[in-house]
Image (cartoon, rainbow, N blue to C red; front, side, top):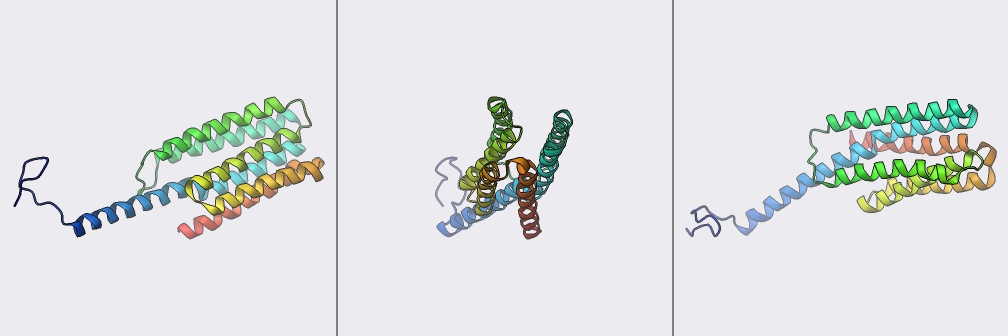
Amino acid sequence: MADHPYTGSRAALPSPREAMAALDGARATMQRSRRASVSAICNTPLIYWGVAWIAGYVGAQFLPSVAATGVWVAVFAVMLARRHWRRLHPPANLIVSGWETRVRRAWWVLFAGSFALSAIASPVPSYVPGLLVGALWGIAAILYAVLLDEMEFGVLGAWIVVLAVALRLFVPDLSLVLFGIGAGGAAIALGIKRARHAW
């Protein structure tokens, strides 16, 4: 038996078949971890985001500006608390490979960019910043789908963008409430579908 090329020990080297089996096992483990990560980001959270969008956009449509701002602050506070809880209680089969941290940073960039776009767009009718920010999140969903090969998420993002444009052009007076229901409802439906499949 030959010495190990790095340690000098006489440990047996794996055969090509054993090496391939080990690689296949590692790939399977990483795939399960990826599914767990994507599930944590894109399944049940879609339901929460959908409810948040409905509440926020309906409030923006019908409540005075101060009260509507309060609704949005409450919505984002709940979502941030939930994200923090998920970070403290990750899925048991999750193996962090590094891309999850980049996704979280990108989420914060998008979050801050939403407020920047709202400020840049003002002063305009109140529905314009809301639709603009919604379309931004739709575009982000499409990019996320491209990076992770998640076609359903890309379809959701495309629907959000098209809906924002259509409502801006054809139903501006009720655009916020219709956008909240249409985009938020679609997110809830996809979240339920993906969560049930994951179960």
